Length: 249
Length: 310
Image (cartoon, rainbow over all chains, first blue to last red):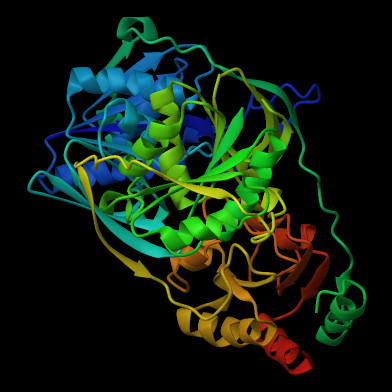
């Protein structure tokens, strides 16, 4: 069974982004870029399913600029078999990415599609669900455990008040949460091996998808910042200030 | 045009995030309608009809809607979507799962996690874990939106008198089924709605100490318990207590962070709290940068002492 994993190139999670002075966006010109951490978890899960003999092929897909090839190389160094880059310089919004992935799914016919639950740049949490809807497939978001058996995926989801389990007929779309697994570190020999794997480059036009965006960013601003107050010397002072100054006790 | 709010409910009552979502819907202009899609959900529909400012409640009832399966709820929303200029969901696990399906089927963009309505087509939302705020304008005919509850004061739970209209329920998608749920039971207030939150981080050192130190303080204050991602990953606390970019976003009157260093992704989930207290023995911890009251101390001494002084 084939698994398709979507990976996004984002500003590394350790980088604190700065808003541009003209309010047109955040300055990522020289920022370190990495694979979206949730997508790493998705790749790890796919590779583990292959190692267990459940999956036969893991195909990593990324949509965006040419540099996304690096992200695909990382996925392949983790164990994905090949990569597909849908290359475009246009800014992609989740609906456009979902349409691109749907077009690739039509061609590749994966039994399972794994995505991170959200990307840490736009924090949208939409692409997987949109892909599932466009492909008319069942979905499970916030996956904390995935088990495949008899043409079904049994997924335990981390929801607001605990966990719930859903059973999906394959093919299906699963978006993964933090605690599904701990992604492996990429080793140098595997990086070398990944260089020999193939990346196919296609354009949105090849897939018949219009990627124009309909959500316009008017401006980006710094959030209201909190100013740190002076420290309190001891617990007694803390309680006194919370009671008499902040009046929250 | 009217705005449709898709209620979060358990077939009996309406979740608090829905009240904030109604507030956001009202800010978009036009009437506010609420959809209750459930099974045996008469009581939830009645509760929705009492929400202040709601003009109409649409109630769809069928077994396939019992457990909030995204495929079925999305189909139900789509069945009534025409005629609405805005379709809003609370930005919680349910709303986040359903809204994108609705948007994709309508071929419109979705605006996630809005914290402010500037006008009927322009909304503010945090990006990069709240390190920036984007003002975005939707050119789509229908605005599909998820609403961050902490951004909007909830409307009153009662005082309204909306009509309840039964509408035909969709048939199930058939490709997914609900197989069970484990609800973390707690007598404490709901984390997302609590007035006081006591949170613990990796500094607690173990699940036992997390329970022994944080539990009594939360009990004394009538507070909900939260945790940092580090504490959850280490197994000190269950995932549904995680506060942060990818966990719950809270904005209580008082947030007490103990043994939490203050990673960016944690701050994203709590920095809109009214008053923040940080207790940490590392004076350099970034949590002090957002704290109104910082106490540089060993939490294992400070928290028990705090208990005796409350």
